[in-house]
Length: 96
Image (cartoon, rainbow, N blue to C red; front, top):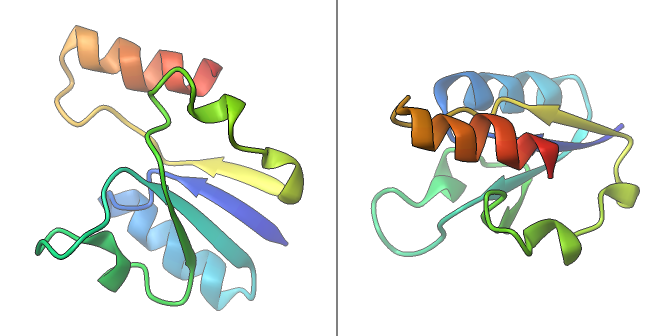
């Protein structure tokens, strides 16, 4: 299957990425940052497609099509757990 995975850089997301890849699925991950810094997620997500984008930005989903995927899996979660961040990530991004 062609799987779109949200939240791939977190602990659960990284485990899901590995499990889905090992099972033979084609995995695409959406990440917020890419670049030369040590936190660049591409090294941790070897063997999968990585696209840059912020799923909490209002316009992201208008420019992105999920039609090319067979499944969407979300391990997306608030980084801080504050009510504002939880509303923006846990609720608003999933609704979008």
